[in-house]
Image (cartoon, rainbow, N blue to C red; front, side, top):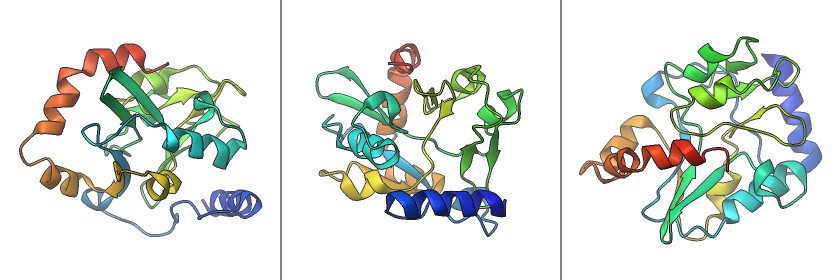
Length: 190
């Protein structure tokens, strides 16, 4: 795991910006933090997507971003991020063991092992993994928080499952995701 931390550190030093989630430590699942975007607040401005693609790939291109924003209808935009699921169906689905969890709980893709088969894309319940058109490999959010810092309306933040449940105590978010699950699934590759 130390080689991953060194590699990510070198990458972030080279391109500037914050270090990704530290991969030392051992949080419980209830404490795992992840980036979340609230579709009730999101305006669909795509700043998070553009910041992400520019930050990692030095181009503005939504297909290269580690985050997706799917517009279901005007005024209803879903920012989609990896939730680092406890059971991680993406990890189980990968026949090459290319997806692993760091000791901080962040799920990462090893591009050397990934064949781009897309089984992790199909397995992700949050539609947060897609295939990078540049290299044909899986790509997903690694929780760097650059989008959190740049969202002009505060629609994106770091949270835990427990905090998110408290935030959604009336069930509005859960109902919204359930109501639009088929559309999100059908459009996850957009």
